[in-house]
Length: 241
Image 1 (cartoon, rainbow, N blue to C red):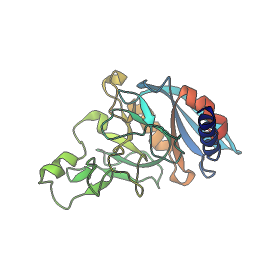
Image 2: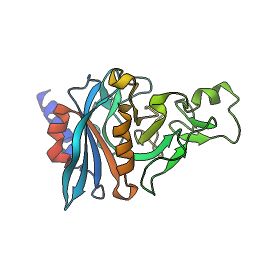
Image 3: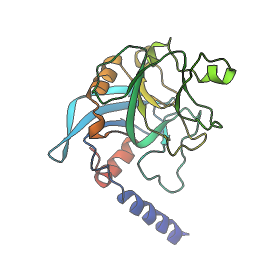
């Protein structure tokens, strides 16, 4: 039994050590939580200069899923036997993820010219139905939603915390696992941070706007979210900021 356990540990170490942040990435937001069951996170922003990661500005606070974290589906390897995020588990996905486009209720936002931005209307959907072929995808109808399914999938327009959001590419196309977790974003926190989330990472509007303004798609921005113990263990292995 000890030999088997040792072999598994060695295999996990080898798999983890084979992964490093993509060499083309020069921007990274790092989130560190106290533990797997914490809904609080400390966030930092980094940029790579001269081949080395350098912090930009000071740290700030954010909120995570009400039940904490669980391994997500992103760029990173998942430890053998690890529990993975599922739809509705109220946990934020841990790991390394690309950062995608921006959605909001405003006509425009301050952003890099190449950053995708879409002003949300009543015809816009984000599919959280794990049985749908469109699961965890953004859709725009050519008419107003009419069926119960379409109305349930409508993106929120009249809720301040969801008035601006940046996509975190967990379980994202083209490799979407049914029921593997959907609609994960950076967005504005609720009740000034007094409330946890259903799985997103939230923060003040000012901080979110700073991230959106700084993100440059050409520099492959990433989000690294881990419990503190995992972050410290993987930082030298994965070459984390």
